[in-house]
Length: 77
Image 1 (cartoon, rainbow, N blue to C red):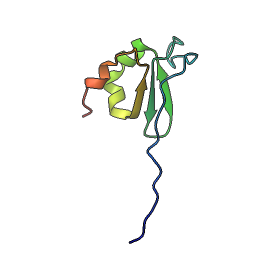
Image 2 (cartoon, rainbow, N blue to C red; image 1 turned 180 degrees about the horizontal axis):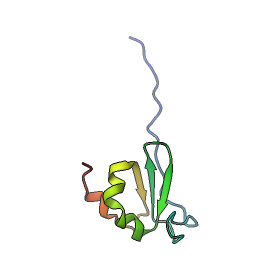
Image 3 (cartoon, rainbow, N blue to C red; image 1 turned 30 degrees about the vertical axis):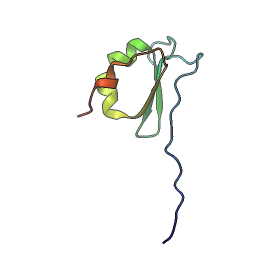
Image 4 (cartoon, helix red, strand yellow; image 1 turned 135 degrees about the vertical axis):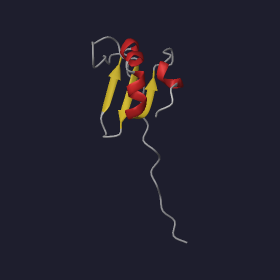
């Protein structure tokens, strides 16, 4: 049997305190990793506003521990 090493899955970190929302420049509360390799940062308002769409295109999501994202309970279609 041939053993192969596989790298651990990539993880996305929650936004740093100085990162800003890509839509409105408010403090970032959630980072979304996209299938195409890009990342977006959203404030709480925009993360929840676009939750239905984000769950469809996100590969991975990381939120500030104090932020409750509406999309966490949404199942992608």
